[in-house]
Length: 164
Image (cartoon, rainbow, N blue to C red):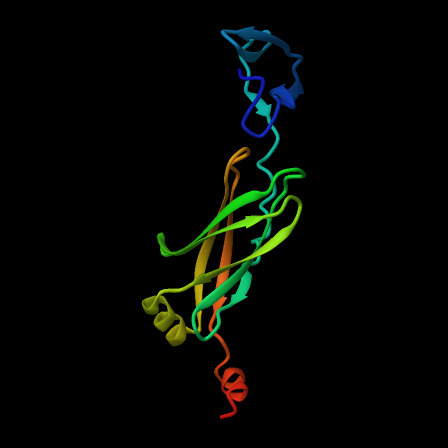
């Protein structure tokens, strides 16, 4: 029987409720637990699946009346600057993209402009679920995905600024 499962190593083996000792043997690179077999009902115990993580809260981002969305990105390098590309997806379609260079170890702001059709949809629904795919360039080439809830700009606040 396999000595390891996807969740971890074999914790124990019982035959009719009595513990059975096992030894490990490797066959073609796969580790197995071996034991003397007799007519009995065997139960192997492996660790359970990891506890389900609580649903991560979506990051809320406010869009301006002109459909601009601002996201913070970080360059984790210590010596060289980073080239970072952010793609904003809605329903598996890329609706906005922007590129920004950020100094080593610093944070930068990337501004994306939503297309007219998405701005209209956002105005009607007041909120949209989107995914930001943040990709680094050159060495490392890391990609991160962040789920967002884009919220439409408050109509009353923006009308006060214009004086109306």
